[in-house]
Length: 380
Image (cartoon, rainbow, N blue to C red; front, side, top):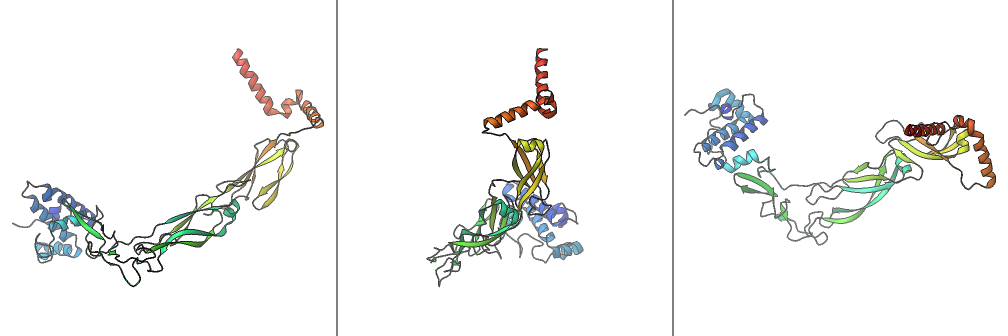
């Protein structure tokens, strides 16, 4: 019986992509696999046919020869013209090719034990607001797992070396058969290292790593804030499988400041003033991170009034304009008055009361008017 066209077998066009080709083969393999069609005598033949078509079309050279000469162009090539011929694969290898990527498996051939990168570490570093705004350099001490200096990280006693794992033969992985799935897993004997240690190093006890306190210099750039992280490449934990060390992340925590609060690039502060200055106006000294500045307070300033001092904030670490300082004034009520001071204050109160109340205390007058209207409406 004449062989069917390979593209027709897989149900694809001649310009099919590699991804679509594999997808079509996977669909047919799932449909016609003998383990799923035990009562269908034709399933194995259709499975063989799909396998043969896929083996030819997935290879660029074989596909080009097939497109030019048809079956005659690939009849003598390995993998073409039959399921069980020279160069063919058994049913487990076929299914492993298609579904290995789903379960993280694949062929062992040419592979080796997995090499893992060391763990990343995090160090929380507290700094002052002044240091965060201006930038600084500091030293930190961290306990860390580093390569053993006695065995040079091998884990084996000096003068000896790890031996090849007899379970996985140095590959670091073993293949487990589960029904018609072939799943590759980390070797349970060597835990993926491909080597076993029969005579461990007395210092690290076969781990290849020991704990050691390291002192590192950290440069803090200007403008950092709580939550920012500085990465020190290769300063994390050493790998226990011969891979590169992890990284160290220095997480910034800015301590609370007694005067300022930070809001992005801006700084906030509260400035208490006496009610006389608020009433008649004057000048105040306002603190900034770079020293004191004069602030002109206009007459009639109310509590919660906010003054903006341009460029007295923070320059963000990721760039952008320097923020501002927002100074919010709070009018302070005098306390601990003596009799003379109280008498003077009462005279002042009488002077601005009565017919002058609306002029000197517009907010209080407006509020009292609202209260009166509220009760009038209740009675009405």
